[in-house]
Length: 217
Image 1 (cartoon, rainbow, N blue to C red):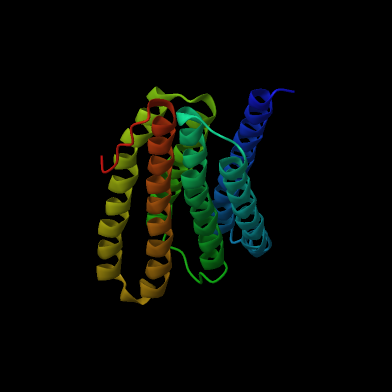
Image 2: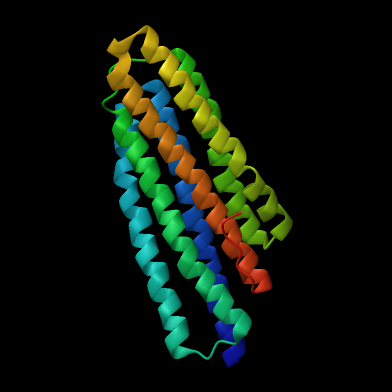
């Protein structure tokens, strides 16, 4: 096998590792939200324990990237691919962290606010969809899909604001729900951050293809 073919094979392996890491994090989000909605402590524990696997994958991919940089002679496009991988694993790892944090909170919630739960459920579906579509955009190097995901971040931000506004109304009626409200608000904040991480992944996907990194949109 030629040096170039060998390098291309290693780049393909790198991409596959990123896809696996992204898929695991997306599943962790789904499981964390289900644990929150159903008060499934066992499932929450599984999400928390599974976060270590994502952390391990981050370190493995980072080592892979550094090995490619040090032992090969990547051209400009190759450097973009490797740089993208190094940036993306940070966001994917933080997505896993957010899922674990949501699962941790779900183990200790002692009450329920149905009208807020409904808003959070919708917010979770959008945030999870953004992350899944961001990973898919990377897999297919689809900059149009990446742009569409970035545009959806406003939906998640608006949903977060709606949760905060509704929370104020609820607490005005019943201040005894303050502890539950804090837990709900923390979960909503983690979901809002998921949208931000999805945007970051999309911006680095665009960079991988175009060499231009746009941020702050």
